[in-house]
Image 1: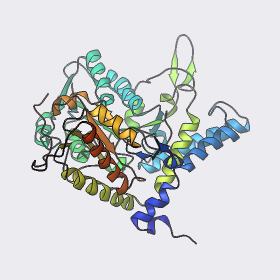
Image 2: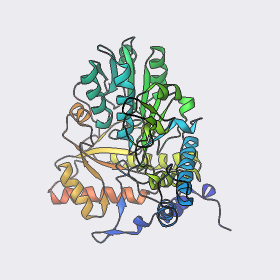
Image 3: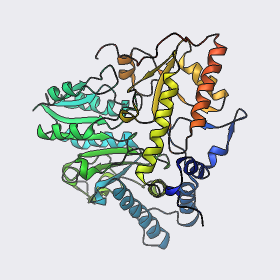
Image 4: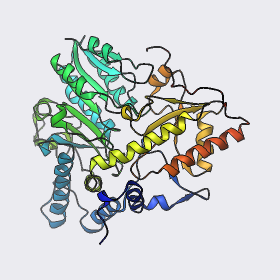
Length: 435
């Protein structure tokens, strides 16, 4: 009998994990694929692919709308998925788990359903310098519509939130705080527990953007006491097109619907419409049945491992990657320089090589990274760059793949006629000035 996967040494566990991901057997430009773009989207294990395939092959039907066998099986599949995901994030009530298309839609749902109803002129929305556009644009639109004011917690020179500034900025005027759990550029893991406590003491509600955090960090919404948590399935081994909004039931009950249409209503006339119960009040139209079922399968896959084992495995990769970056004097790595303060997201620039060219050169070696502003233009301006290269890791990545990344950097130097500056001392990037 084979050993349980949690009991295997880390290298054997990763070897076992990699066998579950068919795409990792692919070659790109004749080279074995090294997939280091997990902050954009993760790859999918066989079990998730099979769950989606099984739905379409055996019980494809419209959930919540029929009494025939296939419809009832589809409804059961969606609601079992909801309950499974609620357990994964520690939500005591599955009805507080709303299915959306993605994290972006989940944030927009709160901005529309809560913000437009309860915010008024002069109220303050507190964001941070490191937010993704999806956690900026909805609040910008809300501020324009309501007269609310956006305030921004700055980022320090080492890529962490300025908590002293945050303490000063959370006041009686603060009505809503929206903050990322983990930066998709800097890798910074934010102290969301502290921010939640401070915001609640001031009477504000808190939305956590968990798009990067939930795939990598243990999350218990009841312990955190967050008011809202938004995340996407496709960054945590699940399919695209499915996201989740968790909200405290007391808040969700008071909010207005975001979208109108089928299944989010109880009664409709041309004179009066009443809303359905949670969670259906916020799920207008045909659900993404295959997406919900696939996301539940992804949660099942993640839960076969202890979170401690996965965090230790990822921590080893983070430390190894940091040691490699620190030996590259012409590379500037952005964000915290210690493994304890960051996740497995590494944004960097190679002196003399534009980031998009670097991404193309690495692709020629079979190494997939992201190059650009990563939907964080305010943070890029804060850092004084137009964009960066970004390598991001997940549970199937290895030290050998990190080595392949740095071999690709050496090829980029050769192509651009550059040499490593051996006498230059590596240093963390220093943001220029606050926005």
